[in-house]
Image 1 (cartoon, one colour):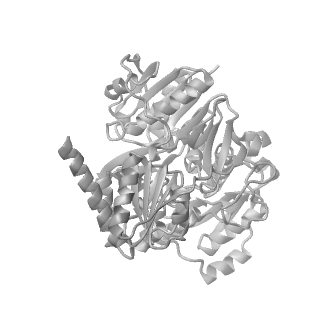
Image 2 (cartoon, rainbow over the protein chains, first blue to last red):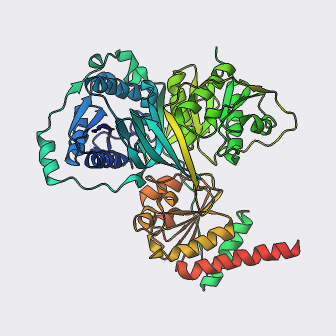
Image 3 (cartoon, helix red, strand yellow):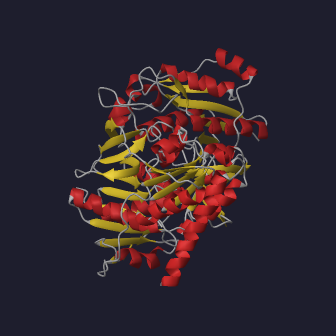
Length: 267
Length: 327
């Protein structure tokens, strides 16, 4: 038994503490990029599955500009075997709808080359943060999917039994493979890149797939294929100046605080 | 031409949550903005029985989708059932909750209906555009849909809960035949403590690294119980193993928007602020008056939490007791 695992990753600004630029969009020009933090957990889980099921392979997949190859190298440094870069000007400005279509087309191509067992995603990206791309990708492929996964309990070539973190407890769900899993942070503790991994990442060469390679029309992807667009970004409203609760003793402060909360009908 | 705003209510374990009524509240805002009728669908186990409650809260018509395959939540079956209701309704906008289930159904619906999608919507504008936070809450995006049908999930604790109005809307059962499912629900294990769920809490008390250890959370829980609040935590407190991850508030945890957020011993790293800065009233309790959370709080109390918390909890209990006696 061996698994063919794909982990989807994204290159995002390394800090999301950004302002608005002159065109009314997030001011991210010049901000260094990094692997989306939640994707570290997805990559780690792919590597752990490789260790759990000997003979398995793990491939990182991303959609982005040429520079996004850096997050594929980061994934390799962390232990995956290789990467695929879906790239081209036509992919720019895509939303979750257009980007998930691009990912699904790339997965179809990978699946045709060698059947895919499992596709792992992070919880969400720290920039856009919709947390839907994994499920949308599964929908395009008509594959099974489950979100908020905190544990892969059992896995073989046919199915995976997983633990899902719901608002009121945990569900156990069994999925036929191939399937797409969106994970939560609780699934593991990512290890740092190893020296061996770093060496491998420097030498790695990635296939670059364009829309044409994936059988997609330019109008289906990027800004043209998006179902929604951000017209403008703005800063959140500033909060009014706060109140400092003063008092000679802790008891006086406690009493004053409760007075204020009662007055504001919060108790 | 698609017409109507369809609110999709997803019962959890056979019951409606108060956030279901917030969906109807959000749907009403959108219906008024676009001048389209408000419709609702209840999808899942017990839908037919629960539809009557929804039907009394302002929708013109309620669709109920129930089937053995929907007894428990799986993504594909629920999405296909919601799509059946959406197609039957002919709606132009489908509104879902920003829960694990709601987000997944919205994601699949968007693909099934070839619809644009916006999640975690916090504001609906008069022309039907929506706003949502992104970049960890540092920015607000104004989103326009480019498709005739669009799907949105609304942030909890954001829209008013629709009240029962008396007149009940007609309920229509929607036939649903699932495909052979690729997902199978196996079991559910309830959260043992039965604490209030963070995401839908009106009040939250959170503890941070300043608590100094797991014992500090006892005082946080005491205050939370006195207030009827959920318990949250900063990432450092969770990473230190003082409290489970499900309590984490912030960029890598849950986003909360309660009426009252009490931060105890939390300095206010930007990652934490991302998860709670939309709270209506923020109380900070900290020994460091200059930390970011004390600076941005609506009400700041400087002092040792170990001294202040029992006093605050006691004071709240006293006054509640006094009110109860007076009544």
